[in-house]
Length: 289
Image (cartoon, rainbow, N blue to C red; front, side):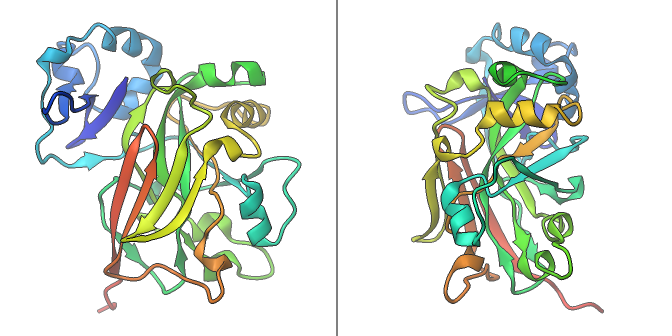
């Protein structure tokens, strides 16, 4: 199943086929009010919703049109993020591969849609394309073998980072540096794990124009999805609708010589195989009046 948020309303996405474009089915309308229009509310009844969605006739879909595509989850209660979860990214950061996941948080106000513009607060904003996990069932002390059973779906994310703030001394300011407005674009759809041949092995990349910034596969994560769900659940319950930004591969701008950061006028494209892509225009902050 593929779920998309259109003008703030949850919809099922019917991918293009036989020359027809993408089409959608409004969840609230098609269910005769059984399920809410607001996407975040669906995660509290995810199993029931999934069972219903499997019965929906795709022939009832209407063209996608030009409606705004929003984030598949707009107001999760918790947003976890994982640092240095690819060996090559740890290497370029000059740190040893972690023996345990490096966990920090992003504030909910940073989340935005897959095509929304992002205002750059400085000249030191970096990219970090990431696979984002959406939790569908409460996870509390979950075994690794059961990790995927608590996942509603996967989406594409960017963990944008203001590096001057991040590396402020005497301590790292990860949460603040990564939570400016717009610093968490996600989307364009949520895809359930059963849609993939192997949800643990997906191509992941980001680019600006013809410049490929990052390219890897999620199979190269140090801590894969099921293990992250399990390990996080040992510290605090994961709640329906929560997000896990699972870490970025090598290729970030701060690790280059000289560093390469995002510039106004560019469009950052982030993509994951089988899910889709974000296309976020980058704009300059307007001077204070």
